[in-house]
Image 1 (cartoon, rainbow, N blue to C red):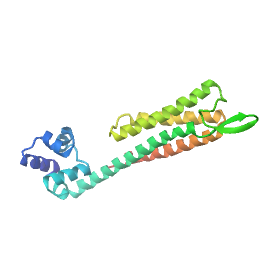
Image 2: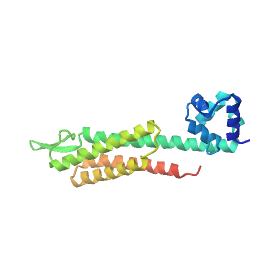
Image 3: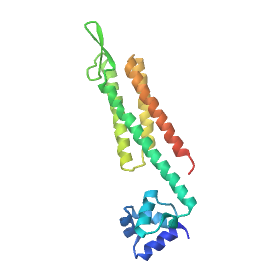
Image 4: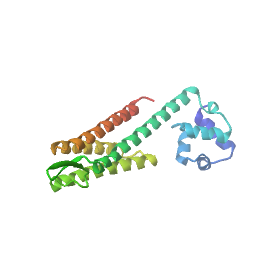
Amino acid sequence: MEFNEKLQELRKSKGMTQEELAEALYVSRTAVSKWESGRGYPSLDSLREISNYFSVTIDDLLSGEALLSIAEKDHKSKLRKIYDLLIGIADLLSFLMIVLPLYPKSIDGYIYSVNLVKFAEDSPWILSSYWILFIVLIAVGAIRILLDENKIQKHRKKLSYISVGVSILAVILLVLSRKAYAAALAFLLLVIKGMLLLRYVQTDARKD
């Protein structure tokens, strides 16, 4: 007997509807319907809930091969969540581009390093470009983390494109305007983010 058939049998033995079982397991009715129709398996956490709720072992519910497949998918999901969080944090760290003393300012013939708030040596449009680029990166990082916390999968790819594109623009602008310290930090954040995105893509590309 397959998992979907076992789950149906266990549910019916308690005289429960799919909606009632979903409430008991803290999942959606759609998820229960998907499991019972054989179109997918629960996560390991949901499997434990089902096992505890019906007082059966996980081995009674699934074959070893199916359990291994679920474990691999669960591992991939957790890795993606970690990479998403780290990428979001890397974007939030663009805040450092605003608050750290990375920009040269001439005072009485001496060059001092100041933060972006106190920096006014460049033309207004260049200064505005700095602010816009860094604020966009911070916003993208915050949105990515919020999506991750709410388990929303949509728009991840678009956010990644925006993040990398804006980061590259920031590095180019800082290099052209000869802001060596700021350009170095922006490039470092871009490299870190690129490595994390690469690992994310590699994790996604692995076969289950």
